[in-house]
Image 1 (cartoon, rainbow, N blue to C red):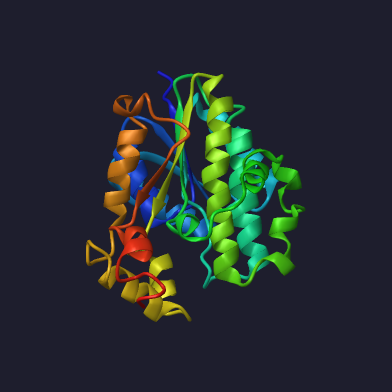
Image 2: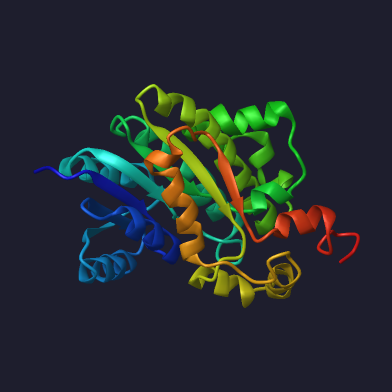
Length: 278
């Protein structure tokens, strides 16, 4: 009997936590730029009784994305997409952040929307960072939402002179993720499928530890210490939200972004993390 397929882009803790919630009885294809990372997560899941296999996939390379999607289709109907791939402001320069987190996500959602099976759904991991930058104009938001992926990086608001640093580039990429999900939800809906995004705050993962040890480490530690929750989150807490969104209980939810940050963004605007109180 042919199994439904779950595609996981990004072999990290958040992606694996989501795949473990949703992957029982499905074929799971795990794509990552580092084959060793994909193999490690696939082995962990296989040892836990899942049907998982690894594949090299570079989110910054559209040809690689399409090979990943084709490989998934060869296994069966692609019913689930989890995009948890990306780089952080302390891990990469501006150009890489835009190519992976912004362009790569846009390309993946465009192409996955062409092959997702009816009744399918997807979730892409964005970030609280997209909620904390100043609002863009309606015209700028529309450009981020609807410009074809291959033309995105030519937009004036994404040029080096318009971006202050890697954090600003990351914020812009995550704002783009949220807007792309809204626009893609319309296209996915024509196939009877849904797509949403989740914007985590500080989640304890290897990527977060890189941030804690990076140039903004003190800022991030202060963020979770002074947010209403008073702590960082866990990958399983993100998976709680993804499980709702990608189950029948979330059937009326599409084109939405869910902020899960322990109240850090609320504190940034209206509490002790506000810039004028820091």
